[in-house]
Amino acid sequence: MLKIENIALVTFDLDDTLYPERYYVLGGFKNVASLLAPNDRSAADALYDTMLDMHRDGQRDIFQRILADFCSDPAAERLDELLNCYRLSNRPLNLFADANHALDRFGLAVPHLAILTDGYLLAQQKKVELLNLQSRVEKIIYTDDYGRDYWKPSPHGFELLMNEFQLSPTQCLYIADNEAKDFAGPNRLGWRTVKIIRPDGVYADAIAEEPLFKPEFTLTTLDDLELVGS
Ligand SMILES: [Mg+2]
Image 1 (cartoon, rainbow, N blue to C red):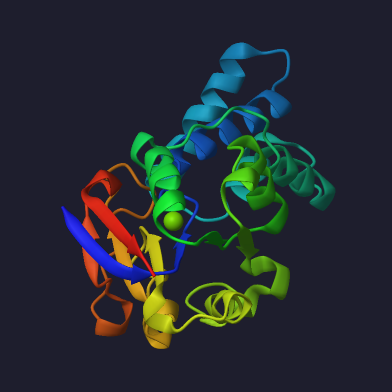
Image 2: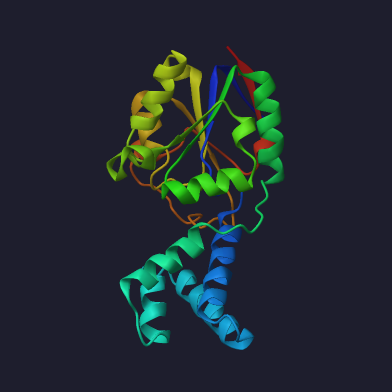
């Protein structure tokens, strides 16, 4: 059990920290496949498999490629339609069990809980709604509200939280999964940081070389973290 004391604010990352992002991605691909092949189940299944393969290969621009390959008229509006269909999915999402438990436990142990998440604003808001997280934390920072320059690893959102709650950096803890971008901002400010390993996470393989990007602690389940408030 890892015990961290004198904490007044716990801030969680969203994707692959509180819920499995893979389910969101797969659900979005299913929606897009149904949109493109509404009356043809086998064509929709083939499209879904193609998107899945591209995603597994780490390909970018999946929807552009799908449109170019499968549509005679790959208009720009069509791409927006696909992106919205993917991002605004209503498919149910579930919290990781340890994250659900941690929200309850840390809510009792420390004065303030927050979420700080990157990503397209409307999509992140949709995920928060689907996971019923509004009522479980005091503050949610969507870095996209401030523009792409303020996405992680920018420390901007973390500074906003510290100022809002009038805290010193060592009273603040960030829990997240992705070494490529999650910890540099809070580390720069002097926050405590914990990485949660999610083996099926979309960014599970991201390992940072620079010390600034490394978490202070690494855990495989949030059930192994005990916090003492300040
Ligand atoms: Mg994440």
